[in-house]
Length: 218
Image 1 (cartoon, rainbow, N blue to C red):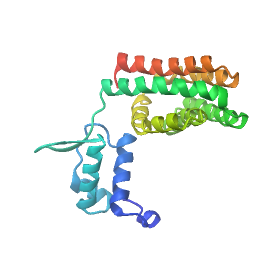
Image 2 (cartoon, rainbow, N blue to C red):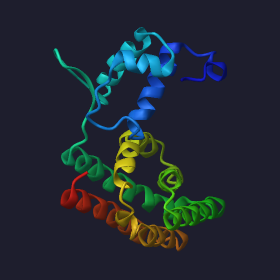
Image 3 (cartoon, rainbow, N blue to C red):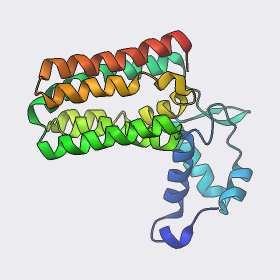
């Protein structure tokens, strides 16, 4: 049931759309799940109209697939989709790390190190929500400290797809065993103002993810 008291200043269709979108992105609605209008309306305490509108909007964004005479389903994520996303991330985040090593302020570096520490703790505790939260924050901090507006905008366009990938990726913590070490290599290079090493470390980090996806699938 949606909390309308907190968000009643916004149109209902927007609230429903954003709630369904987040459920798909975070894996609460898993890929391949049929989007039943009646059930979703009952769960959220709304009519079918905003549900129907949200599903159509999510279809345009590629998060929902509508099949004639069959209904709407949360879109599947293929290995090919993930590889394409990671190919783009590899190039963009390598460049962001390069600029961050030159432009990151001491205050930003301190925050980055604190986030990495929180990420490592979440890995040790097996806390999936915190792992995803701090992993996302770690990479965002590096991108934003690049101080390149065009690069930041381009990476932000990938964030929703990357979020969905993270929830699938971290379903097995064995995949995250090398993450702290790889993150530390990026932090060390940035702290030493070594732009080339930062780019290489970020590039290698994403490459390992891509290779793992190719080997194991999603």
